[in-house]
Length: 302
Ligand SMILES: Nc1ncnc2c1ncn2[C@@H]1O[C@H](COP(=O)(O)OP(=O)(O)O)[C@@H](O)[C@H]1O
Ligand SMILES: [Mg+2]
Image (cartoon, rainbow, N blue to C red):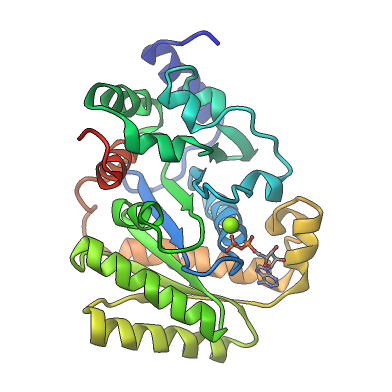
């Protein structure tokens, strides 16, 4: 595959982006949100895809990085077939716009594949070439969602530590709550307590249960870890979610009027609203600084 120069990449991407309406009053600087859980199967991938769609409905331009190295499945949930992944950019074989898969107006999937692991092995020169190749996205996307894998392996925690915000997903099951807390503990440790966390409860049987689960995690995090997680809301158990998975169509597209879709939209609004509470943009935002922090945290360039 021909390697395009940076200017061509930027022009192509600008063309993609200009074809869609620029959102009104969106603050400068891409915001990265890593979706973490601890336990697998709690709904991280479904929430990532549908929150991305819900934010796009609100005028944001969203890129969703599928960073689950074990069970990458965002493409499966969306009925897409990725050919190229982040690894092709790292090796200088492809440009960013060749690997971005459009999912809906203003939503693109960025398949991570083996690229996420390879990021750790880059030397300084390759790392800086890679970061430069991301220029085309800087300033053109508003939100970068990162769907991570299960567990509290270093690479998963690195995504949380590198992102501006962490969305911690749990279900009301004790095993899921315990593992969510474990992920929070690892995050608090690796960031020396400097991490913004929002707790999302999925598959709750009622909003009261969702609130109760979040309060238990928040109380323990504040008492033992010195963190003050916020509550992002709950998505109740809804069979439309698994019906959508079987149709390989995201819930918000397959069943836009379902209760779960409404709850995902409310969560997206809440996350965006929490953002607007901040007086000024946090320093060091953007896709380049996110990947730089990530690569450093994974041990690249040493
Ligand atoms: N709100 C929900 N209600 C019912 N089932 C759900 C809900 N959210 C997720 N699921 C089910 O859980 C499964 C696992 O979700 P997934 O997003 O793949 O989890 P993870 O990415 O955390 O491993 C889905 O295939 C779906 O069947
Ligand atoms: Mg997943």
